[in-house]
Image 1: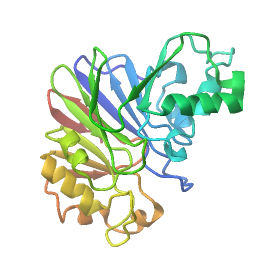
Image 2 (image 1 turned 60 degrees about the horizontal axis):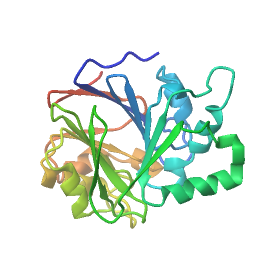
Image 3 (image 1 turned 90 degrees about the vertical axis):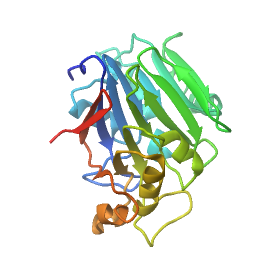
Image 4 (image 1 turned 90 degrees about the horizontal axis):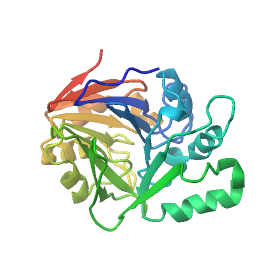
Length: 272
């Protein structure tokens, strides 16, 4: 089992730094944030369950799931997660699971149940669903952390998350987005920004960022530490960090699966 972080520490693990494109080195999108005994999973693309196990974490230990939007490379393993949570041989879930996503998730979830029926329906009271606004900023309190969301510039269900602990340490996870003022507002002064950077400069497509555009968001928001993620294969052929340096002078790191960081008292430390 993974050891719980010290009091006041946020431990971050990149579970998946890739996309919908199959890769032997990059799993689909997912980030694990541990705060004391709570384990938050942000997005759950294909391969997330295995990545969790490789980090020493079982699905029963996951306390919260947060979805940035409903594209398959971000939400595709939810069905497998719920199905496995019913298995009586050791992974059957007993503790409450809190799922947070944008408005519209309840309808999405009901649609999944129409397809899979009882195979993904957990015992009554186990799954608790929270919908956040996809038309403006929204907030929720979890005791160990406060969550702030803003709509992102991708699809209708796209929201980014800011996680803030009582000592005012903060992490921002954008999910997928194009350039937008909301990304800057959400990331303002954060200790760590985990930002998508899907395609190299010169190969931009609508709804996604390039390294220099992600750098611009981090610079405008005054972020000290920037982790670029969600890399399509073209990104592995060029110097992503150098392109980001055109617009950003802070600490920039290109995500890899299993990369780990810790934040405590506003200081971000990257694990070797």
